[in-house]
Image (cartoon, rainbow, N blue to C red; front, side, top):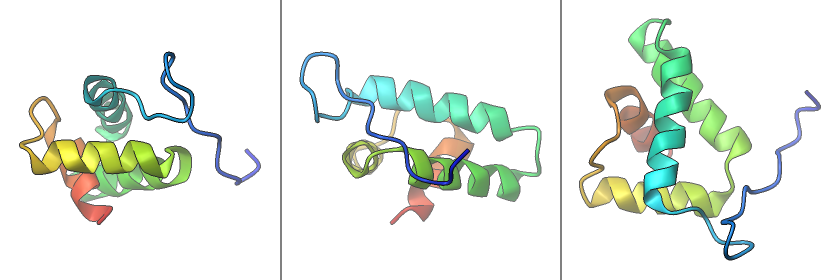
Length: 86
């Protein structure tokens, strides 16, 4: 890994637009599940670090808005990780 951020994963229909919240929820939960074998606080931090490093800011903003409206479907690790991004 070069340590440089990767480009945004654009919506397949509109380049430069973050994917729909359902896709972001699925991806955030997958990231969290990859860290779930660690102690809870470490898993939350690793998930948040991954989001900061690899997700485009528009994706993070979309997920933060989704969480503000209830965050249905996000697991506890992903939900806490998003809360630390603010």
